[in-house]
Length: 207
Length: 207
DNA sequence: GGCCTCCGGTAATAGGCGTTACCATTGACG
DNA sequence: CGTCAATGGTAACGCCTATTACCGGAGGCC
Figure 1 (cartoon, chains in turn cyan, green, brown, orange):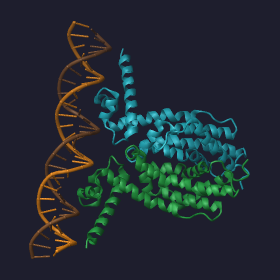
Figure 2: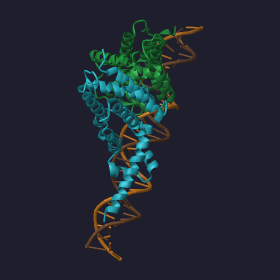
Figure 3: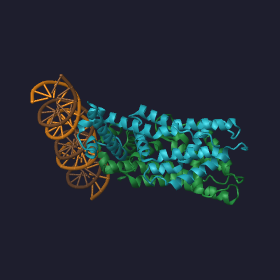
Figure 4: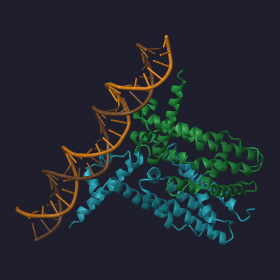
């Protein structure tokens, strides 16, 4: 059967993706050479060109597959049902973990510079990630608004404020390589503080 | 006198910086060729190598000089003296204008990808820009805390929350090229909304 | 005006890049 | 066991890049 050949091929495919991701995230797209990837993955360039067609194809595959892997739990997971504070806290923690993961930091770094080269890729990355997160959170807030727990004009804007508050300067510093990702403890504190301010800020008593 | 020669030289220097900035911000560091810069600026490569030594020197000069130009008003300007709402609003508007300016967006894009190549440059960029902004805002908040207007544990963290809230997903979308910088009207609304939530959130009455 | 220094344009150098042509090898299949 | 298609390694190609060697000319200085 051809199955053996196929699984070996998939293993090699994964190894290539893994190695390529490392180099791309370290060096950026333009500064990464196919040779450098092969040096890390073993084998020969022919592997890459057989599997992904060219450099752009390889990079697209990386972004698509790692974004899928990292972002889908954020959407699927059901974090409603508790009170708003618990929901926001869980939400904040999940999105913080996702955004600070080395893979997403790497993708973010390249997405930012190569937005011109890969506009579609970047667009779908945003919509599956931060965009969808904000929309999802806006729905939660909308429900709370209907229950009379909070006061709000524009729930989507509010959602943006919340995720912005959790991102903070932390994300910026990590992305710029000025500090390592936060520990669990730091993440917990940052989210708790943001939740507190946010809840107070949008409480029904508001002006 | 050698003055004529010197001013002509400075004019050329500025033209080079200007053209180089455009290309760097459009294409990224690695993908930008010296030839492309010269094509836009006129003259010959020798100009660049005489003036800046090499590609890295040119890029460093761009970042240093435009960061100076854009960020210093944010620090020097005295926006205290009014009540906290007015101060926060002015602060939010100024920082939003700065962060959304094409130049700073361009620098940000490259800083993110080339953090490995220019660690010192990136560090000083952060410290002169977002870092100093947060520290400055923290002082303002600290004063308000001492006056009993707000309740707070960690004013620096609070300051981070505020700037994060104004950055929102807006900054992300602009940086990814998914939308143009906000109009004055949009900026005004976003800042007003953030100020409102923030003020409510940290008000003395807080729990 | 003559000298001399500095500046800027041209073209060369040396290396690196993505991509592909070519060939040896391998492993499935009858 | 022989055939054949797919696979993967090597080396080459053509292009592009940062950097510099060289040289002609312009402008300050005496």
